[in-house]
Image (cartoon, rainbow, N blue to C red):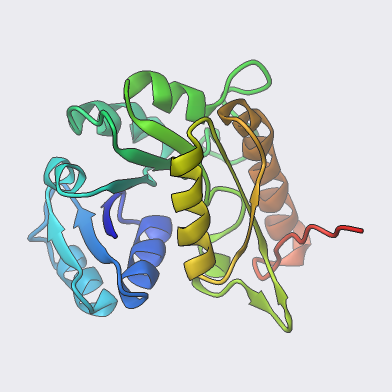
Length: 209
């Protein structure tokens, strides 16, 4: 699968690296693809990973991961050009700068805003409810961390589930894209627990009976 990464920080860098190592063709999009930081990221990812501008990465990919800070998300999406028909995985949380609360929620979500900025794209909310360290290793003894995702396009959600499964997550469909109104506050819960004394090596598990 061809995956473009828009936002090559901790989340995008970790997911892109792991997908490249799993055999996917990953393109790290950057405003400066020739920078030393991007060169180091590509070298560490190995496989067929390469770098390009963000717009080039999106145009050449079937799936685009959006993992920028919330403050930069709209500008990044609108700079990508026409994303019609592409799967756009939104991993962005609308945190305030101090991570104390969300900038928006309950009546809308970052994912719904992203969908409005990228008309025609198949938006799936995913990879937003845990830290990048858990993305790097979702295994906890014999248990797998749960990874919730939501969206309105069934085929796009199948792809998101596959990509989560490729990394070792227990991927769970949380419903339509409006459920991002719940998943984004859920991310804030992880942050508050992780930085409230539990540490970052925590994840959630869904139990059924």
